[in-house]
Amino acid sequence: MYDKSKFTVKAEPVMLGIESSCDETACAILRGRKIIANRIISSAAEQAKYGGVVPEIASRMHTEAVDEVVRQALEDANLQPSDIDCVAATYGAGLLGALLVGLSFAKAFAFSLNVPFIAVNHIRGHIAAAYLDKPDLKPPFITLLASGGHTAILYTRSFTQFSVLASTSDDAAGEAFDKCARVLGLPYPGGPSVQKLAESGKPSVNLPSALVKNSTQLRFSYSGLKTAVINAVHNAEQRGEQINFADVAASFQRAAVDPLVKKTVELAKKYGVKTVTAGGGVIANGYLRQSLTEACQKAGLELVLPAKKYCTDNAAMIASEGLNQYMAGNFSDLDVNAAAAIPLQQD
Ligand code: KG4
Ligand code: ZN
Image 1 (cartoon, rainbow, N blue to C red):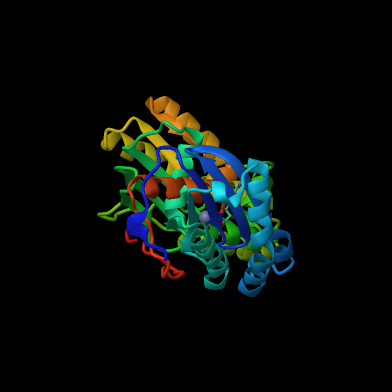
Image 2: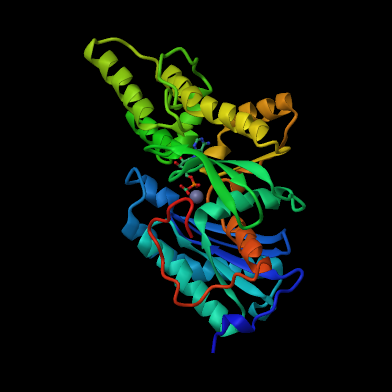
């Protein structure tokens, strides 16, 4: 019988993490914070044929890959299943069918090994990627979170607590990158395509900033920026004018990224923290990484910037957040269900 009250906390557990919220089936193993295996089987190439993620294809491919990706990770780490001390898996947010594959596998695995299971909020996983980069990192710190589903600046108070200081009122930054890519006829996934094109362009097209002005709260908005990109391209087409797509990409990138960097540094100063961290797929963006590095240097702030492969979806970050919850003794029951959406502040 699985009884979460019977488990004890080890000082340096072997944590197996599983991620399957979108189009990557991933498994990683940590010993303490040290990554000893990190595998991803991605269906992105298959999804690219359809211009985006098709949920049914994602679920099917997770079903085909989950067994294999866990086997590969155990082999890389040179471990047997019986060496695992805890199993963590993403329970949300994401595509329901996709989540259920990794979550069900993880629950069954933990049950069979009689070890604790931890259900992880994907967004908390993105925040926890910073501990992989700097294992002795300790809160408090300010986190810039920018992914396909969320854009926010957070105050991370402890290993298990954070509050939201600023967020988007509509689309997420990653979503805007993906939509901008589509308007410019670039392939999926949109973020890396826009970044590549922007490298050969000048930020000369006038676009609105993603920062909402005249608001009592600090807020971002990406739907206005997205519409402005669509209008700039369509208006030029209608007038029979040439518009340089590389310039549009560079202008969009700047309008999307600059306010995030500026406000992150301002909030770090306001809250008196010495450290800034970042997480989420958009943090893999080269322009953002450079701007944030420069801005933090200038402000005398330490920046913990996870490697790009730990910014986009991966299982090491899920295991890292699993470790935060494990150390706090927050083990999950086995009846946890998958959740398509989880409000940023609640889980
Ligand atoms: O965190 P993530 O892998 O998945 C979610 O949790 O949403 O983020 C995916 C998002 C996509 O919108 C993708 O276009 C964006 O991250 N992204 C990028 C880059 N790489 C991925 N955006 C801008 N520049 C990039 N290099
Ligand atoms: Zn993600």
